[in-house]
Structure formats: structure tokens, C-alpha cells
Amino acid sequence: MKHYFILSAFILGVCTASAQNFTRQDTLRGSITPERAWWDLNYYDLNVKIEPEKKFISGHNLVRYKVLNAAKVLQIDLQEPMQITSVTQDNQALEVTSDGNAHFITLKKEQVPGEFNTIDIHFSGYPREAVRAPWDGGFSWKEDTQGNPFVATSCQGLGASVWWPNKDHMYDEVDSMRIRATVPKDLMDVSNGKLESVEENGDFKTYNWFVANPINNYGVNVNMGNYVHFGEKYDGEKGFLDVAYYVLPENLEKAKAQFKQTPMMLKAFEHWFGPYPFYEDGFKLVEVPYLGMEHQSSVTYGNQYANGYLGRDLSGSGWGLKFDFIIIHEAGHEWFANNITYKDIADMWIHEGFTAYSENLYLDFHYGPKAASEYVVGTRANIRNDQPIIGHYDVNQAGSGDMYYKGANMLHTLRQLIEDDELWRQILRGLNSEFYHKTVTTQQIEDYISKKTKKDLSAFFNQYLRTTMIPKFEYQQKGSSITYRYVDIVEDFDMPIRVFVDGNEQWLFPNSEWKTESLKGNELIFDPNFYIETEKI
Image (cartoon, rainbow, N blue to C red):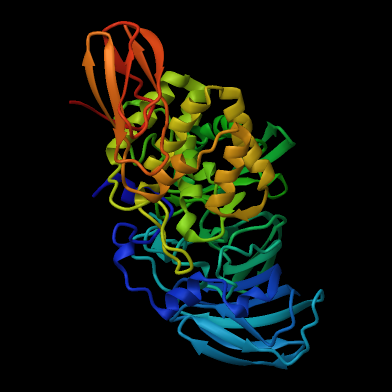
């Protein structure tokens, strides 16, 4: 299996998705329908009881929203076999009409623009069981080595509506939420945000968590296990950050050693990206029975307490064994995925390209630019160029898995073009400031970078994001004379490249037309930091 397809955080079959015939359900799931557009999410109060012996969950979700335009029908999503059992507003029962996984609620109360209203949605059922979490998501019903239930959720791409009713489209993040998870009394639930209280309920306990910041729907999670806890305070850019770790007892000592990389991660990423985006909610690493996922302020971990990706170096450079892939990659998503979130999953490269790139920025910070360069260049072996990085809009379809390391190499190439590492750092930090706690489109990201670099990068982004072509530099060299051009490029693509001639730096400025010029010597070496192909003819 190709590395890119097993890297992290998404469950779509990205290699074959473009061949799908999109259905009405795809549109209901992936578009901003009229029944979604007229109301803006404000707050969730999610209550869920988890019964592991039955693999059954039940509860209700109080949804508070702001009325943007007068309307009567509201769309809520919940996937089969889960069921909505009732919906009320102001204690009045409401009619629900279902179309597959989309449920249309007819409201009785007049919806006045500017007002805030609530609906209470009761639900229950046997949620889809994850076959191969996190890529085929849902509930993971496992046991630890002592036979205790060890349960977790993962649902990127598939959608949070696989287990709880919500407005399951990424464009509208809830401003804050509570998660009240009721679990068997001898177990613990760890969810997003800060733990407010624990309540005894007979044979069960309810763990009440509060998320103070906006959160994307797939970032919401429950994790149930026989956890032990330790933590620390990180002295960061916005003061002291609460850092907490929840692991199984038998792994406590391993975790204390391995999780020392957490403050190293925070130091590197605050340098490159700006302050951790969720100081109010803290940062947690939570052991789970699958590889891991970027759940906001509750990053899940299952990398077997070893460096690399399950002990392997995905770059083949050796540098991939200098860090724990899941700690660094999934925590990198706190900036790119959880802080800056795509509006449409077609733009998922904003999450994965920048976060795959964060791996080599971590190396850059702690081991230097040579290590970072060798790592990111090494990851090109995982790129297939099978489909464009950007997928189809409005149907909940991601693009190619190349969004990871083709995306990372595109950004690494862009850093070379800017020729100013401090400006590049300020751009990365600026993105996290300009789009702080916001949902975005690819075009917004492109426009921001073009503005800050004072370069028209539209052809550059079109080339790497919207085609499968890698620019090919064709050339003929006779002594110190070189004739060259680009092929396999989009219109107006004219990216300069750096070469070394007899050890001295020289820039060439190819486009689609042949050019001839003199080199400052005879021995020509191409800078490998530029993601292009070369062919001597």
C-alpha cells in the first residue's frame, strides 16, 4: 500500500473518488443547502451515554443558532443506523422528514432574523463501527490488555453525523460547546476542551467537558478507557498552556518518556505558525486503540510510543526517525485544520499539505535546514500524481492523497522562491492570525500568500494544485552554454529555479519558450529543493 494512503486523518478513498458518480446524498452532505444557509451555529450541548457492552449510544444535542433569514425548515444530519427519536423547540414536538442521512425539521416558531433559538434533538442507536480507524471511521469498540473497554471515535470525511446529530458541513463551526459523556463508572471519558466536573450516576459517571473556542465537527471526540493522567505547564507565547496526557496504566512510563516531544513540538510550531490557537482549552494527547487523529485540543495517539510512523521513516532519509510522527503531524493540525479549517473538503490540502510540511519545519527548528530539506525531498517517493490535489466541490469529496507530500513539496518550493525565510515565517504566522478560528477556501489562501509575497502565484498554484503535471525542465548544455524551457506546464507558468554551476549559485528563468544563456562554469547541479523534473535532451 502506498504510504500517502495510510498517513493520517482521512477516511475517503481518495485514489478513486473522482471516478464516483455523485448522488443526491453526496450533494445533501457536501453542499450548503437552503436548509443550512439561513441559520448560523452558535452552541452545542451534546449529551451522550456510551454502553460498550451493547455497542450502543443514546442522548440528545441542544443546538443553539442565530437566525440569518426567515425560514421554516432546518437540516440536521445523522447517519444510519443512528436514529433521531424526537426533536423539540420550546417544548413543542416538531415534525422530521428524512432523506437518507439528511433530516429536515419543520419549525413552528417564527424565525426572526437576528434572534437566537434552540432545538433539542434526541437520538440513539448502534453507531457504525470503524473497520480500520481512522481511515474507515466511526466507533472503535476495543479492549485493553486487561479486558477493559477501550473505546474511541474518529470521523473525518465520513462526518461527525456518523454518531451524533449536527450541522455536518465544515463551513459553519460552532462557537463553543459542551460535551457530557456518560460512561461506566470504573472508566473515564476524555473529550475536547477543559474538564468542568464529574457526576456520579449509579453504575455510570458523566464527564462534563467545555470547549471555549470554535471547533469543527469532526474534531469533536469521545475517548473511553481505564486512563491514568499526568500533565505539565508549557510556557508559551500566550502564557502558560495546560498540557495533559491520558494513557493506559501499562504505558505510563513509556508515555512520560515519549511525550517529552510535546513541548519540543509546541516550541517549534509556535515559532513557525504563531501561538497555539486554543490556550483556553488546553492541549491533550490521549491514547486510543487506533493510530491517531487531530481532534481539537484532544489529539489522539496510537503510535506505539516509538519514533517514526509505526517505527518507519516515511521519507527514507533517516530524519523521519528523529520524531514521533503522530505527535508532530497530528498536533500540527491544531494550526492547519483546527485553527484554519477548509470550508469544503475539496480543499483538504489546506489541512494536509501544510501539516505534512510542518514535519520538515519541526526538523528545521530542531535539526537545521539540511535535515528539513532531506526529509521533505525524501517524501517525494510517496507522490503518485494520480489526480489533482483539489477535489470536486459541494459533494464532500477530497482530492488526491498527494495533498500530503505533493502539498508539502509545493510549499517547500515556494519557500525557495521567496528567498527570505523570515518573510516566509511571517506568512505562515500571518495565515494563522488572518484566518484565526475561521473556515477558508483555497482561493483565500492563495490570495493571502500572493499579496504578502508581492508575486502573482496563480499559475504556480494552478500547476501544483489543479493538475497532475510536474514541471519538466528540458535542457541542452554545450560547455558553458545552456538552452532550456519548461514542458508539462499550465499557461503562464514561469517559475525560476536555482542551480549551482561549478559550486556557485545561479538562477534560471524558464518558461514555455526556448532560451539560451551562458552559465558561470561547466558543472551544472540542480537545487533539489525545487519540485520539478529535469531532462537533458
